[in-house]
Length: 510
Ligand code: BES
Ligand code: MN
Ligand code: ZN
Image 1 (cartoon, rainbow, N blue to C red):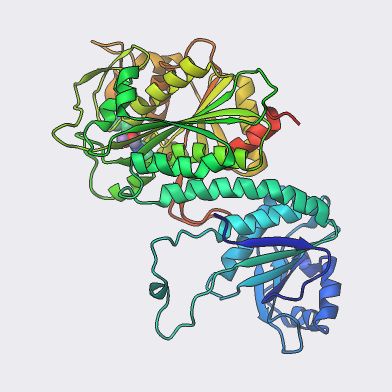
Image 2 (image 1 turned 30 degrees about the vertical axis):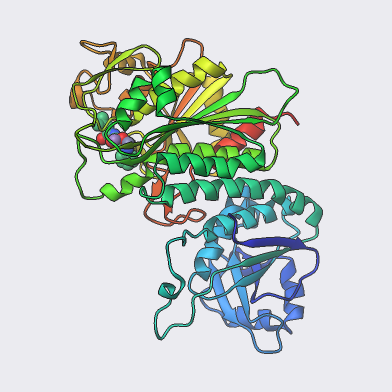
């Protein structure tokens, strides 16, 4: 849930801890500086003249106390760099940088004086607001209040209110309504990733999805173990059989365009609520991070929440495979041969290559039952992806150039960057079995290299001829350990923003 209260008005409320104004390179004041200066009795000019560390460069933030006569306790200068380079992405980053600078300052409310002279000032105001909200996200569910405070320190206060002053409030408010739904989707995805595996095991996760999405008019169907057995989902079930927490598949249907008879868009997510590696056990160091191995499913759930929240005129299916990968006497083993929903037999060579097994059944199922227009899957699939592209770009494989172009475009517009990876038959063939149809590790073993590509090659084995498909390996982007401008560390919610844009730009009736 969004905890930050965001609002817009034409006139300043003068009811905030701090006023924020923008300067450009060389201390060039934005238009509202003059009016704020008047409100604070010339004090802006005074501090600007004395200040030696601020010159308006991009992302600089200077927080200064105001005297008692002023209507705000603080004035904050925000450096915006070159005026003609402040685009939508940069605006969002500025909102994030501002909030980062407020950390620990106990400022609870800000009044942001938007530069009405900027091209598309209302859009940019909404982008700044979005950056503020994205960066102000906190996961504090498991902190008891008194533990937040140390002796000898003032009580910690978070930013709670951000008010934006600009001319075109009508446009800003209209745009922000939709933006708020996207933010809710991102925050839900982050919450799910940050939640620990003892709270978010498959059944609890399925219930959370239902609780979150049903009230928005999303049809939520949960497949339990019994149903999955009946359907023959041997691959997903094998992954889950070592755990006392039984697996689930959740199908989310959003029909926002009832008049359309076109096939729906399908999004599929890997939801391994904890990945120990199973019998092919992972090393202990850092294993706790594998609570994020459901990041793909979280992005799908967040995406559906965003679309349904703003009543998107599109028909979308989300399918998530929820399962815990545990070692036990019931666990599946390396050398086991299993039969997937598609009928293809799979030799398990490594129980830690479990995500592809979960996706195999979820992908086959969604193609079989819904005959979608296109399928996009998201998964924290391989460590190799992290090595290849780190935490900045999401490696994206696509069988279709047009689909890739649409995704790349949405990535550039939202700042959730995608990078195209090669989908080559060589790697699909690498995953053919020696004694089965396919195997879950490359035939050439580690010597094959290209671990992210062979994993995509495995998934490709389960994509039907003619299905337009993309696979996003979010292993490096779903979870970060260092803050970014609009993404605080840990669960990022990656995928929600880019895919929400992808849908609105290409597949939504206006
Ligand atoms: N969940 C992991 C991939 C992963 C690694 C995600 C690091 C995020 C950060 C996945 O299930 C896995 O274990 N993959 C193996 C595959 C290998 C056994 C073929 C890997 O990448 O090592
Ligand atoms: Mn694994
Ligand atoms: Zn995994």
